[in-house]
Length: 533
Image 1 (cartoon, helix red, strand yellow):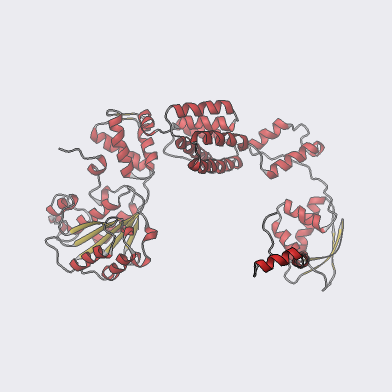
Image 2 (cartoon, helix red, strand yellow):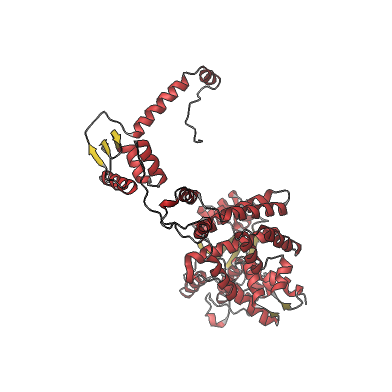
């Protein structure tokens, strides 16, 4: 007999055998039990998660003639009657499977419409299964609309697609829609384990975990890889076989490479990278491995003790959690952005390997550097060591504290504010944006000198504006400021004055001879404020 691949051999034959689709199973089970079965179904989701298998199970349930079914549709088809067997073998005369990818036109849909009124030959229902339904043309969809809305009582439609956004909403609204989910890695892992036991294949847990990770939530992909791996390993499945066969990167090596990058051991990092390339590991797999470690470290820091993932051994999980304590969320966020940039560059680079090397060196140089605000604080502290709470802070201590998310404790500095512009700049630097916006739009300065501000307020000013400003000035300068309000209807806000200056500048530019000539050459052109500084 011809060999049957595992993906077909172990295709689910009942709803109870579907993996990871609990919502779909519950709804369909209840609808069959209550005999409230929709006339059309739409199954959506990514590849290899059971759309076509579900369509055939529904068709079998509708047409199973087992005695236990009491001549009614059943949620648990027997799989042994002639109807079930012929549907499984795709030869049932009343269950028509159509591939919309190869039959996209209105003529193909018209063929369905012309035959739809004819009664079934021997089945209970005539079932049309249209796979990749999004490939139908717009005219084909329009031709199907009326029939889909009110089909004959003996007809059921089942559509399957991976591209739900390409299907008209008029079609979607006429169907009972089910969004099939990507299957969790541990469910795939358990399924592969059961199959290996049935096939009497010796395997390691590490090998099955690797296959589950690579399959990206697709049972079919997982079974296809397992099929290939069994042949490659000669029936004795180990993790190293999967690594060799697919050119994957072992997680331990990803950890090692990430640690070398973070510790800025660039020579060792390049040597390790060259070894991995010589071992046949794909450059994109190396980068994906680093991104996976980066992601796990970030999630581990956020979730802390609650973090757990099925694709990590206990030793690697402990290693990850220990490593996450050495690195800050700011660094991990920066590393992620750089890794994404490297990934994008590698797609279009003439030499992928050199691009990867340069990218990882860049990652090493920048991964541990402080951001703008932290750098300003560090430089400030170095210039004014007497103002630092701990007088013994040196460069090495600063670097260590930065890496562990510690904050330098500074004494309050006496800051001089000589005019309103100084105040606005300081608010911007301290990121007090709501107060900054209020002062620019609703605060009219009449006079300004250190320690005293005379002002008036616009009608839209916040009730808390003055108290917020007073509090800020006290905290930042360590002195009490006199804020004196005087009514002055002629006074203008900072935004008004700025707008007037812009208008004057535009008029001045507009009067320029060169600008006038340009306007003649390009009628309708206007002077606009540039967004670049």
